[in-house]
Image (cartoon, rainbow, N blue to C red; front, side):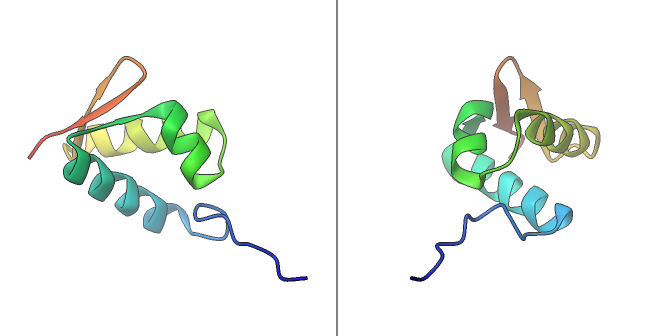
Length: 70
């Protein structure tokens, strides 16, 4: 039996944040709930990541997610 790897698990914090920023740029916006499901990490982890990316000016946090700044 082969284990299927969840994209966010095993990924370090900076890799995950880079992925979130890229997804926001590609889609124009991201939702916390979608990121939790897609990356397999907790809501609090996503909230911390979005807060960090917003402080860097890479995304803009909005209620329930974030939008691209590009």
